Image (cartoon, rainbow, N blue to C red; front, side, top):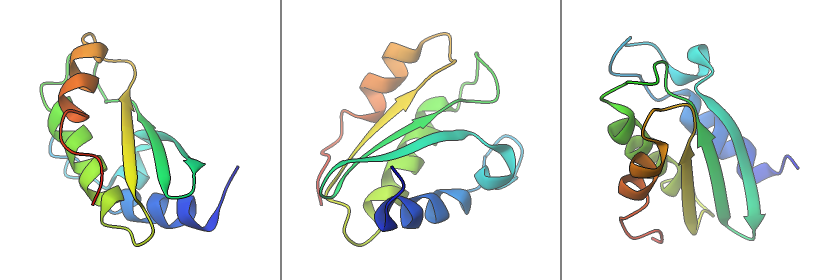
Length: 100
């Protein structure tokens, strides 16, 4: 379900720049899902351009940081899919505190 908060988060994420290509995520369609699970709790799924991308952890952290900066967002869970080491990327990205 698309909410005002998910639209704001999506707009913010679309402005992030991918380090490998120097293009905005909105152009690359890397972010595949933004959902509000409960009031202020956001779930984001992204897919790196390559299943071997060495920058997936950095990208996931930047996605998480940008989402947390949106007013009204209380916590963010980021899920990487399509990387050879999805579970490791997800653990590292989400190991930082998830609230403001």
